[in-house]
View 1 (cartoon, one colour):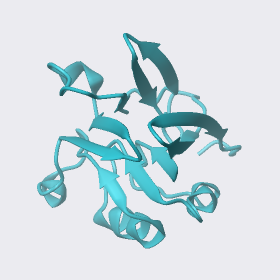
View 2 (view 1 turned 180 degrees about the vertical axis):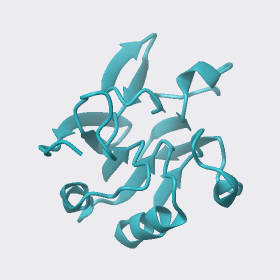
View 3 (view 1 turned 180 degrees about the horizontal axis):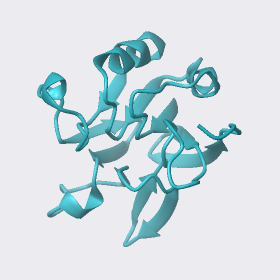
Length: 152
């Protein structure tokens, strides 16, 4: 199963990002979507697992703030800001979060912590990034995707 993992689109779904969505089996979005049109567009590519970010206002009230689900034997926990995590649900293998706009991949106590960074408007001169993942039989592999882009 091929997944795209992204966060912090902030109302901008770049063509360079949508190229990577073609042919994925699922999309994980860790919040700060900013517009319902982005949710609708993402759903055109693949099933969407999404959490609400701090910038997702009234229109996003039906989107959960945290989400736990399993795909191909891997249990995911998603939240926008990892500082809001209390206790992880039992059996979680991967935590997906956003908010900081900084790409991060760290294994801690048997749990893989993933922040795909931001693939929306460039902020703080940071890279524009997302992740592609392969999930199969309880294992996950991650590829960092950096989107070359002029200042915006």
